[in-house]
Length: 341
Ligand code: AMP
Ligand code: MG
Image 1 (spheres, rainbow, N blue to C red):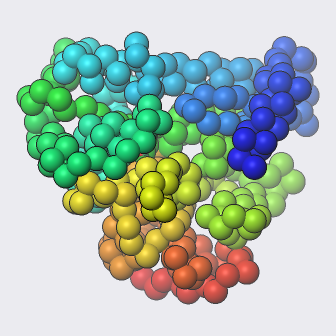
Image 2: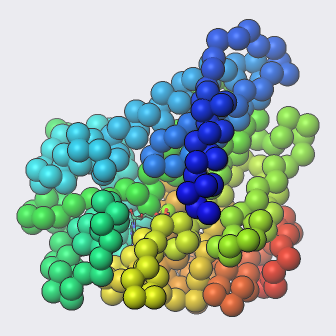
């Protein structure tokens, strides 16, 4: 079923021909564009006079960031740094490093940019999946310490103090990218836009008719159309779930969001975490972190940072917890609990 779905998506992309630019546009114009980048399908839609040109610029920027940040492309900045243990980084990559360290600190290490050796041990980058031996996991723990990342801001260089350390921006790269796309739109004079980077949505302004965007949040449950609908403007809506990438061995499912404390895929009450925030990068980092934290800690984290973001959590029992900042804007057929400040 999954393969048929993927083929269908590829067919749609081929038929749509990705993006085409260059038409003359009036005030009421709109442009839409499908891209495959960062290992995911993306759709960008912008409204207004310069939407064509803005989409072209956005597509170029996405491809530029993909080339820099993809751990899987052997000649990306991040792959070279991971291979050599040191390297000169562009401003984009240095910015992501600094932001990821901030989020790591704020989330008490639930978000951990040095997780990559463990991702490799589980076989996620190569899809050669395996449950690592305890000794392998122990060795990865010794490569986690973010204080062993040496950054020379003046030179723009980074090196690891311990051999084998590696970085992974998979948990925030798409959020940074959606921020960058929205910035390009703003600079092009676009006032209404919605972008979807593999289920991670970011909106600019409202819909052209002045109503709020209706964002459907993906459900972890197969056969379910969506988990709920959120009405918003000017926000990123970013979801993490184990269902996005996983493998099965001996009847056990292992997914791609790893708890740095256990070395195993985060295993708690949560099956989905959605963060709603002005800042796509922060939303992305926090969606991964709160998924690792589990229900109680995630609720507490939101209560301590309620001015920064809102959250929609779903548990294994199909219960939904929504923070009170957005509870009036969210509708679902599941049982819903409002998290108070
Ligand atoms: P997301 O879908 O945004 O939650 O990101 C998941 C991706 O982040 C994974 O595929 C890994 O590349 C990376 N990752 C997994 N666990 C962690 C973690 N605890 N901290 C930071 N990044 C992680
Ligand atoms: Mg994330």
